[in-house]
Length: 237
Image 1: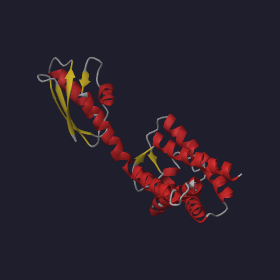
Image 2: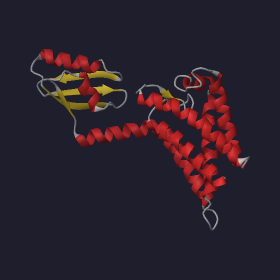
Image 3: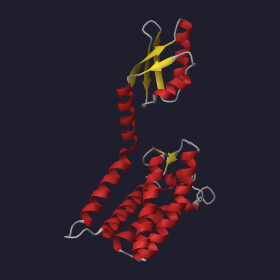
Image 4: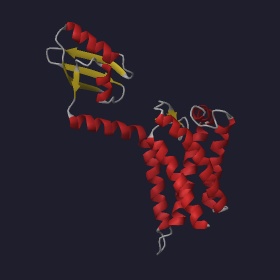
């Protein structure tokens, strides 16, 4: 994608060269054309880059400006494009769970949550199984257990599959939810550390098939499973 930005503060050819070289050094920027006469910088990038990233790369005497609505729209488009797979999965699973919960005259939210958990774990384990080694390698980069025990990545994928089957068949609901609560709590610890430390690594939630960055979306995903399993434990007991 290519976008043109207004750049103020350029007074000579040296300024043009400095702005151009600074922007070209940024990851995912493939080409930059700068003009002090029109006070513009036309930037070609592999994916959308926030305006703040461009500004941080430039000397303080230069100010790069984009139309607010365009920048906001590009950020939203980039976010949706990045997380489209996980959003689609969440949407499908949620829809099926709601249908299952409301198919009778009364609303059975416990049944709906079981269906949601079954769909969630079966779907996510499926993508992990497509490249189990790739998942294990990615998972070992941030999970607190997998960092020390490489085999945990393989075991974790199998646990997700087993939990999906357990929720789908109604096997030992209390035990199933307790295992979910423990496993997801361990998982979210490594995710929180990575996000808060602003480590730019791949999230392994959908295995190695999709290149999803670690972010608050991953935290929400794990926290949701923890909350739902805790709620079902409370309801059962």
